[in-house]
Image (tube, rainbow, N blue to C red; front, side):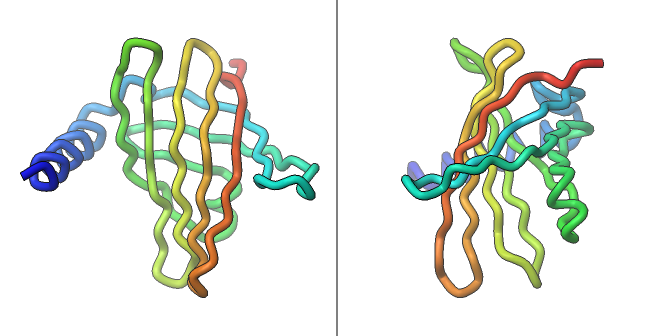
Length: 129
């Protein structure tokens, strides 16, 4: 029963985001993405745009990923969000995180087609202008 309720809740959130946008719809974010692990020191800059119920990840679009529907929900201490970039010929990329004021943070999980999973963390702030 919990699974059915969870699936229904997720479906309602996706429909809401697609029709009305979510609590973070219309916002853009500059983030730094860093691979988890001791031997991964470098960061990559990325831009996230929430618009019209879809998440646009600028670097992913340049690699052939399409904007995707995202799920967002207002909570006591911010807004939680999640989205999956899923193209048939590419690795699935899951973005999830939390927006609090003008700050954003979360994780990116890349599920490679060979079964390997790579985890990244990201932090950033609302894009100026």
